Image (cartoon, rainbow, N blue to C red; front, side):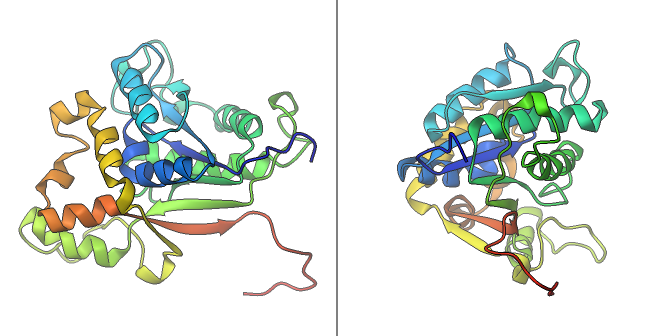
Length: 259
């Protein structure tokens, strides 16, 4: 395709500032150091807000370029984008079209977002998953969003998740007791995890990027569970990132459907 980038590219789509560090900080730092183009689209919070400034510092630490903000409001904080609608309330076609524009402009080989549960069930995360799934598919069609740039189809989509065994092993360490029967847990069965990325060499940068989000650190939000873990468990969480791979392009034309 004309204009194909010389270097491989990785684009993450996240719901809020700080998610880029929590879920994909090690991945972004590792691939940036290995020569890949890396970038992050953040669906909520607007330019000029404190958290957008914190996002900029986090991305500098991770080597992931300038913030790419859709600028919608967080589902739980209208001050995140004064005068703008909540991300959840925007027409799907609008949000998908704006993300298609970023995909076609950046032209990534790989796109990363959350699993279908939004990693832990936050409504903005779940919606980011839906919007990304639709945008990755739509970005390759020249018939769709014709004003958003030339078509581009990433090779693969990875969904950030947690192995259920990791969730269960740390649950009691954080909450003091095992989860109650029937409790909805984050993550997926271990056999659905297709990639475990070793990011131990980049764990300190990931931790620094997390601390760039000073307003979240101050209120304990994103850091609460990590700091509550024993050091061994916290090291495991900072040193590994887990994904499910969703193929986007195939290696050749099939003559039958297989399972």
